[in-house]
Amino acid sequence: MLDTLAALPFWQAFLALFASAMVRSNGTYWVGRGAIAGWRRYRGAHGDLTARAERLLHRFGPFAVTLSYLTVGIQTAIHLTAGVVRMPLRWYLPAAVVGSVVWAVLYATVGLAVVQAWLAAEAGSWWGAVVVLAVVAGIVTWVVVRRRAVRPAPLD
Image: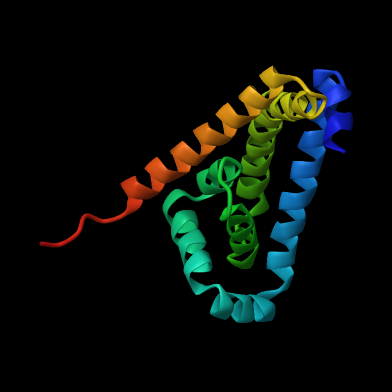
């Protein structure tokens, strides 16, 4: 599937990625709108994640929805929470459109370049393998630095 997207012209890949982001996020939002009882059960099992999503939504409102497209791990919780707290569509939809555009542009450029590098690596190109390893090392470094910055300082 990803190799098919990588072979498409940018605008076609962008449209496919944008559509998939909009369908997924809006589907999650509407599940949240219609699933209050199930949400209480989900929250009981995933209390930390959903509490974090609620705090982000209360603090940043629609900006939390837009910024969620740049996250891994909390994106679905934010969209589900936006539906559960019944964020008005006049706020949710513009935030979802902007976030989907940003995500589609990033994925259609950098993301598909990584896929192409991976395919080149699989075909025996050393340069493709180097690019894939550099991207993976960069992501791991970013996650480690970010997690260390979030941790509270130890008390003496």
